[in-house]
Image (cartoon, rainbow, N blue to C red; front, side, top):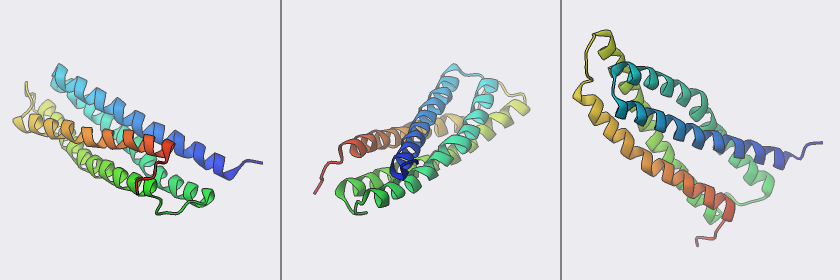
Amino acid sequence: MIDAYLFVKWVHIVSSTVLFGTGMGTAFQMLAAYRRGGIETQRVVSQNVVLADWLFTATSGVVQPLSGFALIVLGGYSLWESWLVVAYLLYATAAACWIVVVFIQFRLRDLAEAAHADGQVQLPPEYDQLMRTWFWLGWPAFGALLVIFYVMIAKPAFW
């Protein structure tokens, strides 16, 4: 017989690993492609990043609150424990950044594809502008997830 709490906890941990790992991996790939230059490189990488975000980041991003809620119920916690409220706020921050980043990534992909199709030798200035925004939105998102890892482990009382 499988213990429901331990199974859901395993799902929660694995999905958090996928969420964080995919985010780090796609961020690294996107930034490395950008720094290297080359329309073809940026075109292929941005296509793959968009796909990976939908396959892995989005699915694990949905699994996280669902499995988290199940853990709260199965563990007998109050929904309003201070450490949980802090985790909700941090998760909302990361999600808000990610949603904007997804739209930026679509646009980056489309700009790279258009430049490639038109035979251009460099990307338009909008690409650089979007990459800067994309880069800076990554910091609060990743920072929030790192703090969530701590909060989930330590369960500190904030008030």
